[in-house]
Amino acid sequence: MKNFRMCHCETLWVVAISLLLMSGCSLYDNYDIDLMNDGNASIDSSSDAADSGSSLSSSSTEEDSSSSEAKDIGCEATVERGGVQYATVVIHENCWMAENLRYEPAAGNTMCYDNDAANCETYGRLYDYPAAAAACPTGWRLPTGDEYEALRAYSGSNKDEAGAHFKSTTGWKGENGDNKLKFSALPGGFCYVEHEVECKFVGSVGYWWTSTEKVMDENHLTLYLSGDRQDFTISLPMENESMLSVRCIKDK
Image 1 (tube, one colour):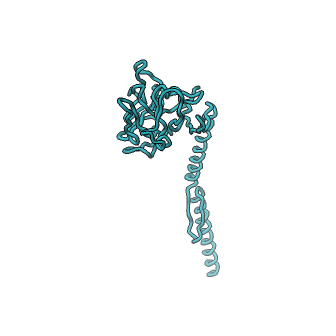
Image 2 (cartoon, rainbow, N blue to C red):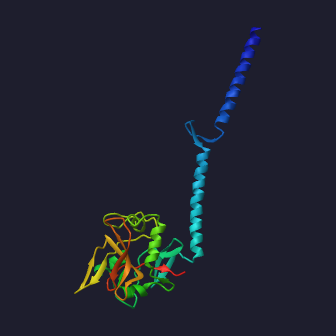
């Protein structure tokens, strides 16, 4: 009788252990368990793993979508002008140059800031309006003020904050941008002529020509960005003789 009770207890113990193990399996059946070298278990939720996979898939999908969009509108990775390749970027269904132009056209007047070639390499050339109007590659042109404003609206920010989304993340004295739009704007300053050529604000201010005329044969609206703040200004007219930076947009 004693032996029987002992065997019976042992049997119950085995059953209890089995039930506990089965319960443990059901407890962890939603996790991936990786046994480490020290014998400890590292447990990662399978739902987290799924989320991670979803994130990677989403990122890949965005890249594929961007590539497809660029192909749909005929936006190649670069565009050539005067033997120089310029990076491009698709923003809001348009193909833009992603850097300032350095090409020197036959029309109008251009210069490097302070006549220093290193400034042309960093910030691009500066153009008066006749030169700017002739500078873009074939099939490209100066953007309108409305097209810059459309980029501002697309960024999702108001005029007090949207400048940050145009500005590059480095290269500005004062406040750099977050470059959300991938426009990569750098502060090339500007030059103008009174009695002689004067240049100001390289590294802290940038002006870009638009094709939108404010006063006929006198001035045009410009995109203005500053290192002192993050606002966006497209209503600032500059005299046609001023020398400013140029970005081009591809014709559709």
